[in-house]
Image (tube, rainbow, N blue to C red; front, side, top):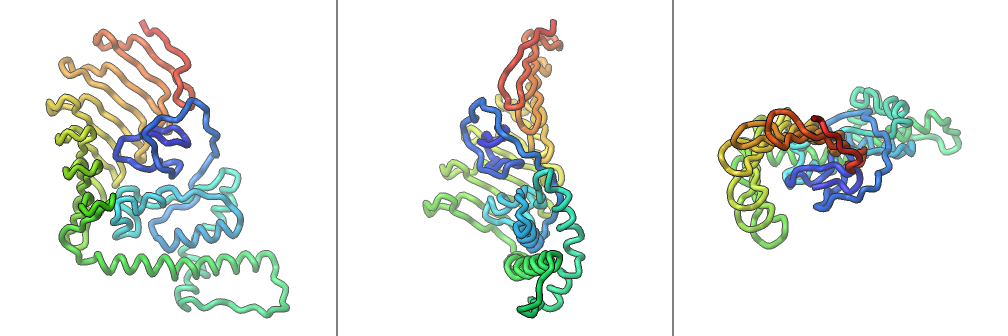
Length: 324
């Protein structure tokens, strides 16, 4: 799977780009170098009310933003649980253009501890009333927008969050979903006393489970995947703090991985191919932001790499070097 915006490569079970928050596509995008905006993270939260408030505040100041992880919180149907965010993707990161970072941090700093936030909670929606003929200074106007954003966030996001918490706090058993509306369940959430312990999915709708994810304390800890849909799980996924950390693929089903992938925040960093008989790492690929940058290959399996391929920032091969 590839991101149509930045070109990053992902495993088949990942549906949305972690950086661009757009839906992935099967085809790799063209060689055109994408235009990048230097996004920086200025705030991080798992509270859905605060997310809504932050959006309102940034919109009021005409600051363009990206809510990293927000678009995939409800990807599997069960959505945000426990702490207010989906355990598969972690808290939402508020990102803005680098040039707007200073102002955004100032607007969002100490958001949950602010006087306006506590006041909105205490009064449950009371609004400050201004005399119609009283001129409003720019600073007061900004405070008014801030308070309005807090009020909207508490009413809308807070209600949804507590409704979901009430329905799941003591749930045990399996909840079924029909993703393609064919009247056959293909996504299964298993709960134990309100805690999510397993997600099973039939991704190609053939009636067979081809993706399993196991949870502990509502965080993903391990997964299994049948990516070629042959009814055998050749891929094993390992998680760190609920995020994909390492993937091991056993292509020949000999109970030893032939390919190992290493991730940071679910973005691919490195991929290693292992020879099935000699256990030699005969190919290694380095990535930056999920885009291939360097490939080294040992063609004769003598533990020394023979060639190195160099790629540009969009993943296109630009140079090949002989190493011996």
